[in-house]
Image (cartoon, rainbow, N blue to C red; front, top):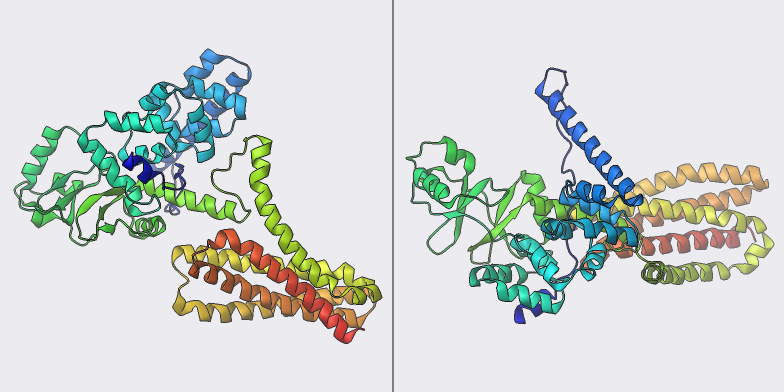
Length: 491
């Protein structure tokens, strides 16, 4: 059970969805061009996929189970996962029972954590064991964290020593690191043999791991030396040695490297696969592009949902009570911040009683500051994730955003101040709200930069805590500056 306890420390499971890395090159398409044919083929495949999903939903709704079963087992595992996530509870279980047992394991690796837990609860122990057969080691490591203990022990007992050792190698690293992402199924070669020997070895071996674009070159101690691309292997003179052809400038990724940095490396260097090494430079495995796609999509989902106080495992079709319980936590936090802003307003009750117009105009200042602050916050969070914002350029960024805040503050001070003057026929109110607008947009710019930088420095997720802090700051400063200026100049 030592191995079982080790992977129990792993956190959320990476989701498997496609995500575009970069915009495709622009082509002038002609009907007789290969680009046109490829584009039409891709569009047709997308239409077919949409039609299949809709036909399956119709068959399930009309209880045509034989037709539904045929349709669902013609789909790709990722498409089945999308379908299951889009169905309410009873319909989801009915559809899951129609999925072929041969597809169960792959489908489970694609669905999000909340849906996966629901599906696993509906499966018998022998079905869970069967679902793990044939999975890649990294996928199996992800699924084990969701399995009942007796199923885990059965799976481990049925493994041979080699597969168990490979699984332990993956589980020994946190899942949000290169070691947690890697697949230990690699083909290694020595640098002192010829390409002809490598080719004969591959023919004897009979197969290569999926998404293999290069072989790993190691020394006798297993230390990583470089890569031998399949293109060079197939096109260069077979009498050449691996040392003469191998690529030496591709460095191995340390197993402790965070997953976000791994994704950045793949994106910037256009990698399909990359070696993973330990601190001594020994080859441990490789990371492939499909795993990096998972990381990028997972980070995108995390950024969007965290800003609303939600997590990636949130199931849209989960029962009302657990959904309400999860969301109530964040609502409670926001309630506390709302009381903070309200307490500031409470300090100026006498002022508001003298000028009712202040109560009418207060939300404008706070709202403009909140929007401006969250604009800056979103840009800084994204830049922090990409490694663009660093200690050396933070001071310059603060100065720039302060200038933007002042410029926008002056523009909207004139607009809002003029509107307030026309509305209430009071020049003083126009000047006060204009001044408060400049102050609050300046504070919003400062908060939008400083808050996420400080949160990252203290190891707190800026996407999760940043929005509520920035909104609180802009609300408090908006109310305080507006009502404070009104107290000084209007009362």
